Image (cartoon, rainbow over all chains, first blue to last red; front, side, top):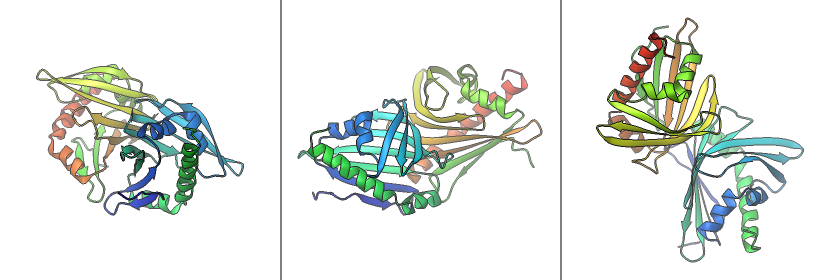
Length: 160
Length: 160
């Protein structure tokens, strides 16, 4: 199996869905921790030039979350609830304060590749193709790629 | 505007979505209460032959819920989280224990028609057309129609 070291970002042609795939030199437990431990999460999420402050974090099934990212002196808030948090899968909702009626249903899978690597797969589901395509055009891949590169460095450094 | 007294259930041809519309002789506040007050909710949700027991209920933005419906001696569990609870709109996730990996993103709108009537609109979004169509074939309209008929009687009786 080839290693997916750059994030593969795909738009589903039939569904208002964005899918991402990336492999990490990590166990599923490490990737789970990086997504659920707020002190770890804020160290890697988002573009390099962003600092993230957690305002609420309860990463359990039925819990919820809210964080604010600061970029060039502007604050961007995000919030949602955790539908399910389990070792191999997280399902959560996601809303950006700047689009308060927009809601994304996010699913993350941590798939053990059996050789010390884990495949992270994510799926973001919205209720319109227009909304999905606006996300794709927003430059989201910069934050995604810079964020995962930070996570990779944290894994290399033993921080997770 | 015509009154929609029977529930209109529609499958979107382009999106894995089910939409429902029904008008009630009620204010938006009453419909909101009927969906958020657990003692009221359990009196109308589901088919006539079903009794519903709340196991967890925190109808606030970031809260969560779980209930069990008893039908012919069998228990059916459902759970989810409340992404947003506000007077004109509720967004929540929904999973049936019998299909534990299936997740629906539900949105409910309470739309004041201005003459003592309120239009309830709902949207159920899933991540596949197969899943959506299986819901439509499941006989869900029986529970929907019997449930809303009970809610209508509660509104007539002044119970809400």
